[in-house]
Amino acid sequence: MLNLSLKPLGSVQVRAVSSKYPRPTPRHFKRRLFEAALQPELPPTVAMCMPPVLVKRQHTEKSKEYSDVELALANLVRSWMVKEEFRVLAVCQFSPVPGRTLWFAKNQLRSKNIEFRSYGNKILKKVFEKTPMSSLNNVLVGSNAILLAKDISSIKTILQETDKLNWVEPLVMMADGRIVDMVQARDLAKLSSLEDLRAHTVQILGQQVAQITISLDTATRHLPSLLDAYASSKQENQN
Image 1 (cartoon, rainbow, N blue to C red):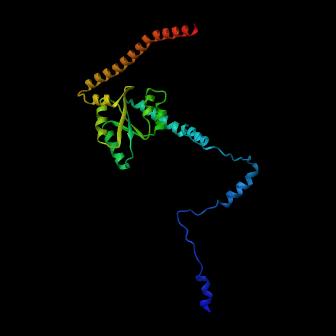
Image 2: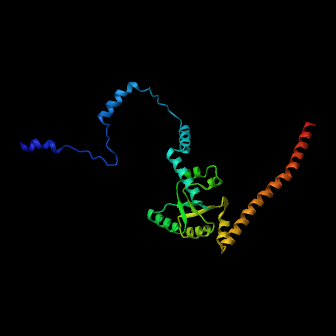
């Protein structure tokens, strides 16, 4: 008799549910009562079906906006750079690296008067806004970091230290408000003394100014002939 009474219990099947799918957890009854009581006072909501193109555009516009925290961080970074009077700025490509390795490299660079910072491209673009450094926005693609130094001779140190690291690659530098590409930076690093470095820097900057002057002079010389040719062609068309 006892076996017959226990027999139905042995046929009960239990369905195994994977832990991959979380169990539904309803909201607290107080929250549901509050929302039900507040529902008559709320304005009616209309569900709108938006096309994917418009949704993507809204997300893109929202990503370009700055929150109060981001604006405060950008102002803090800008004021810190002005206060410390950094003369050399290097924009680098920054690859993922373990945290311990990153902190060790930061301390090594700081011991040689070089500051390593990685704020994200969005913050850096806000920091560079309305400054000569805004021309560096073209290289802020992907994951970037910046190296800052107070002395022009630190260009050589930055190149020597980054050559030892396989997760940081300098893309472009700025010295005293002027852009210096990596080829010119390598040439500056080969100089022996600081005076030679300064003289070579002045020479490079002077060449850039001279190239701009020559380009403007060439355009100015060709402008009258172009206007005369345009006027003559216009007269021929009218005749």
